[in-house]
Picture (spheres, rainbow, N blue to C red):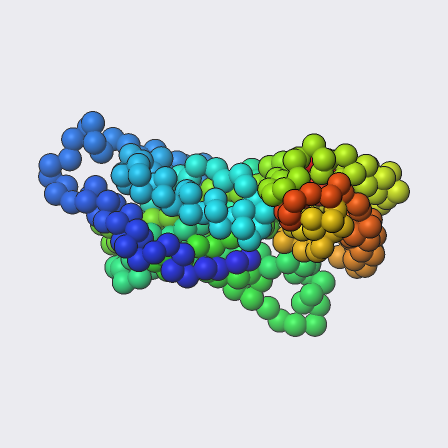
Length: 303
């Protein structure tokens, strides 16, 4: 879980929220062409809230500015270049999300809050099940309610990133039915896309030695690899000489279903050793490679 407060510049965050407030202003003067934009999404025992595409409420250039800022942050910090266009969702009294996960929707979920810090409602927190086995980790401890999960308040201009595989929910909102007092969030999913090569070497000259190493690694651990699930994302810096100058782990969310399993670090170390020994063609300068290595339903990503 990653929480970033004050994610956007104050002026942009205020403008996004200002468009929401303007949308709901003068309620007696609303018309079908401007306000019949909300989908009341109700799925029994799971979802109860309103959602729309943000550009129907927020000026498109500001929606794009948010999306661009998130994509840049995601690529620079997580090596994930794919960011879905967000939903804008509204939770008023009675709205909530039941427990679920999004294992098929992306690698990480994002929730960006445009909710007022001072509001006449309660609830709307994002609830995230903690990693691990709640039964085994509490065998000798009395635990209840929030002792089993993390609670993230929807603070204004706060970005939350979490593993899509984690069970999560949204606490029921109660209080005023005035929509401007509700929970407003932009939300969607991040994923890795293909490998990205930036710098002196062309992608074709990076791909040949890299893909050979990944293929050999996959063959060596083929039996063990089927038990792992999740992304390992690496940032490799190739020196002008062609030697690997560094190999940085940006994301490691590779999980084994057995909570007692201890073999992953050895597997990862083997891969890093293979990559560290790579030789690329010499060039006029450094080259950066963002390389996803995927376990589970997808094979490794090639350059």
